Amino acid sequence: MQVFKFGGAALKDASNIQNVGQIIQAHQASIRFIVISALGKTTNALEVIINKYVNQDNSYQEAIDNLFQEHIHIIEGLFSVKNQAFILPKILQFQKEIHSFFNLNKEANYTFIYDQIVPYGELLSSSIVSAYLDSIGISNKWIDARDMIATDNNYTEAKVDFTKSEPLIHQFMDASTINITQGFIARNENGYSTTLGREGSDYTAAVISYCINASKMLIWKDVPAVLNADPRLFNDTIAIPELSYREAIEMTFYGAQVIHPKTIKPLQNKNIPLLVKSFIDKNAIGTTIGGSKINEHIEYPPIIVYKTDQVLLSISVKDFSFIAEENLSHIFRIFSTNGLRIHMTHSGAISFSACVENKPERIKSLLKDLAHNYDVKYNESLELLTIRHYTAEKIEALTLNKNILLTHKTRTTIQLLMRSE
Ligand code: ASP
Ligand code: MG
Image (cartoon, rainbow, N blue to C red; front, side):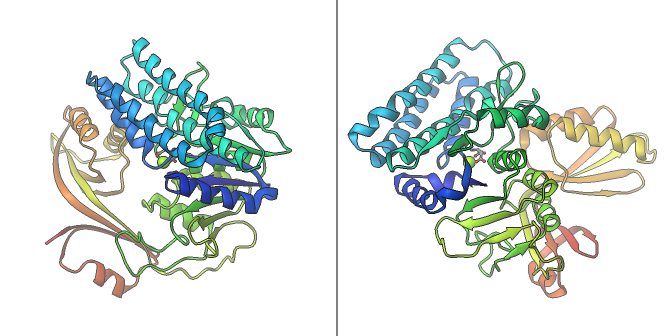
C-alpha cells in the first residue's frame, strides 16, 4: 500500500502528465493514494491574482481567465474531443466559483482570502489527472482533500489535526482502487478552506501515509535522487542513495529544498520509508529515507545548503541592560508572530543577532514591534552557507572571497553568514 506524490514540475504540460500516467500504470497494483499539487507554476499565478484583487486592480478577472485558458489548453492536448466533454464542465464550474467568491466576498483578511482561492490550483490539477487516468483505463477515485484533512484556523500555515483527519481519510478512501487527492489544501471546523504552507503537498502525502499505515511513500521529482547540494547552484553534486530520517530532518531544517521540512516526522513516527525518485530518469535508483532497511552508519558526503538574500538583525536593549532570558523569549515571540523563521543566532552581553530571510513586509512589521523596547540595526544582502559533514577543503573552497560575519560550528554542522567581497 503505497502513497505517491507528484509536484507541479512533473505535471507542467500534457506530455509530462502523460509521463506521470505511464509511471502510475507501471505501479498500479501497489498504489493506494496519489497526492497531486498544482500544475507548473499555478500557485504563483493564483497568488498574483489574489494580490491584484486585494489591491483593487480589476485585471485580476482577466488573469483568472488566462489561467483557466492554460488549463484548457493542456486538456485539449490530453483528451479526445469526446473525452473533453467529461472534464470541461468541472473545470468551468471551478472558474465560476472563483469569480463568484471574489464578487461576493466582504472579508478583508488577506490570509483568509488566500486560502479560499489558492486551493483551486490543486482542485484543477487533480481533476485533470483523475480524468486522464480514467481515459487511459486506470480506474480511480477523486477525493476533495478538504473532506479528509482537518486543520485549525491558522490560514496559510494551518496545523493538521491528526485525530480528526484519520477517520475522515478512512471514511472517504476506497480501499479497492487508487484514490487521487490534492496536496497542500485542507479545511477548518468552520468549513473554510485552509492551506498547509507553500510546497506543503509533500506533507499531505506524509499525513495520509501515516493515517493509512502505508508501506512506502514515493515523491517523484526532477532530480535523479536527493543530492548533496542544489544542482541549480553547484555543478559537482553527488547523489545520496540513503538518508536516515535524522539526516533528512536536519537537511530540510537548514533549508535544503528537496522535501518539505514537515514531511519526515509522520513517516518517522510509523517507520514508513520515503523514496525520492526521478520522473525523468525512471531507472535512476533515487534516495531512500528511513525505514527499517536503512543502514544506521551511513557515511555522508558534505551536504551543502546555500541561501542568499539573508538579513542579519542586531537587537539591543535600549537602557544598556543585559540581554537575558526574559528579553530573549520576548524577542523570539515577536519573530514568531511575524512569521519569520530564524536561521542563525548569536547572543552577546547587550545585543542579540538573528539571521532571517529577506521578507520585506514581515521585517517591516517586526521592526515596528521591536522598536518599543529595543534598538535594531540590520545588514542586508548576506549569504548563509550551511555544511553538514564539513571538511576543511569544502569550507575553504566555499568561503573564497567572502567576508565572514558570523560562524557557528558543531561536530557535524558549520554555518557561515557571509557577504561577497
Ligand atoms: N502548489 C503548492 C505550492 O506550490 C503546494 C505544493 O506544491 O506542494 O506551494
Ligand atoms: Mg507547487
